[in-house]
Image (cartoon, rainbow, N blue to C red; front, side):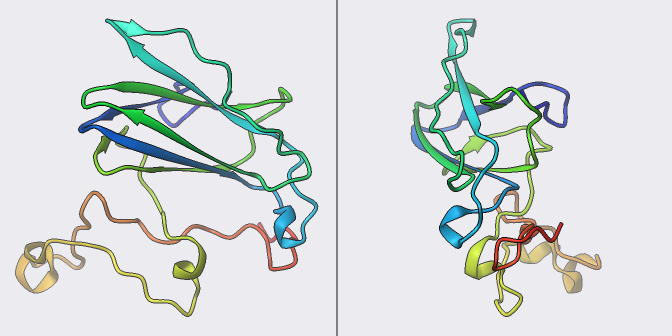
Length: 172
């Protein structure tokens, strides 16, 4: 099981409104659909939902076998306002968990403060693209006197690093 930045084996989400939360997990291995050899590890997600004052026993991993396929999985979880869920990332074959990217797409979900980072992927992350973040104009240099505007909390922190070239060869 992966340990997150705060040393816990899970991240805890709190839904601030009723919503379907989409989770996207991708890990640092070649994509078969792009001509690579495919995943050599199978990562899975375990959901643990709040039950009364505590949390229910962890569910079985929500899984599909990714060996030789794309190192990517997507889930949707329905949450009501105030619901809490803990999410763990595990390696189905018991080995170490490789570097991964976990995106949480929702309109209003509270995540740990360290769980922020780049979210620009695909065409938007191309060196030839222009991507835009959101910032309040009052934090812009001419008004605030700062060198940089302060990004709003829902803005991306930039692009994700690329670990493979277009032929599926590792570059990282």
